[in-house]
Image 1 (cartoon, rainbow, N blue to C red):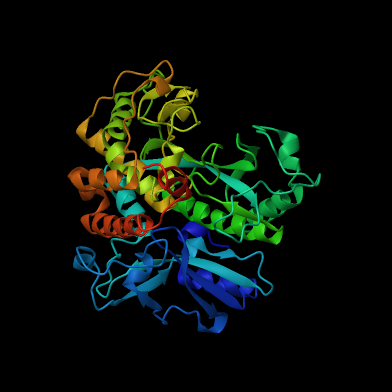
Image 2 (image 1 turned 90 degrees about the vertical axis):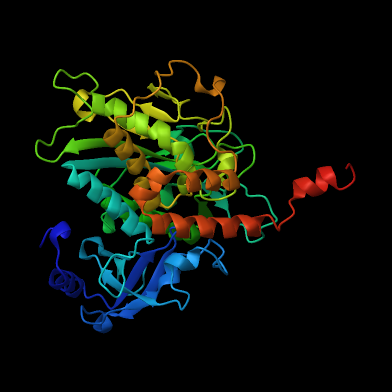
Length: 455
């Protein structure tokens, strides 16, 4: 069978026929990371069909709303024109939980002139990867994705609680790295690994994180676009599996008060495409100038890019002192209090770990963001601050503290607009403005408790 990376549409049709697929889920990741698209009978899925969706489908808020006016419509036609969807054959996978043989294929979005739609998340990551390719470089990434398992919760006004495990009891204490705590949910995780295997997802180790019911899955390192696809599909898989075991899986950044938040730590290194060598290390094994410049770029641009990886009002609850999440962009070797960590490794595996990104981030946007910041560091030869060798929680906050503040910082940083695309920045910022305005219409229990009778 043809290697998936080089699959043509004819190869894709052969793949579907060999597995006697009867339905095809045509998926498009939107700005929030939700799978949009259409489900087609196998007989209707063909190269000549020219499947279309409105442009706005990939550019709506998490509540499904759209801006009523403003710069959003300088990018997206106010008549809501169609975009053409084209399948990426390399992304085809079986849907393991479907009752009939069903495939899922991720699609790219094109305009009527045949150009990638610039505000689609997959297009943004492609754009950044192409900038590296033009320099003869290949980024390699490895995400670590945290999430919580919770008991079913059908009332948004009810607090989330840990689910009941095999013992018949819920966790009431923190069980970091506990094997027995993971085994409480053996049937669920066996199914997740089984589904992941059938979908050829590149998942590695599973661990219990600090919070009650909090888990982490690690992915093997690979090229960014393929791994973003895998994280996108994995999130969908975990949610589906959890429902089948009478619980929820959530990737909210801070779902439970008093518990640590959930992150998507991204390890990253850069290879020379000709030699295949890691440019972060010199021939003698010492850190290279490129390594330092990459860190310098992360430090310089992450604060302005935070809204891309902390995309919701809830995201900023995670970024607080002494909660296993960073509050600044200090860097250091083997230091988990910093925002930018370099794990202990052999020179060939020297890498940088971005610990700022939340689990709620769109994986395509998150990888585009961190690679864009590093790219600007390499291009502009930005020197980093001195290494933080102590506790970075003792240093001041240097990240935005709210969604509104983060949006202001992003709008002012023109260098990021050039790398990520002005159209994408415009659409993204307008959608986040809308979400923030909607949130500000809601009065919280804290306000009623402390302000109602005291002010």
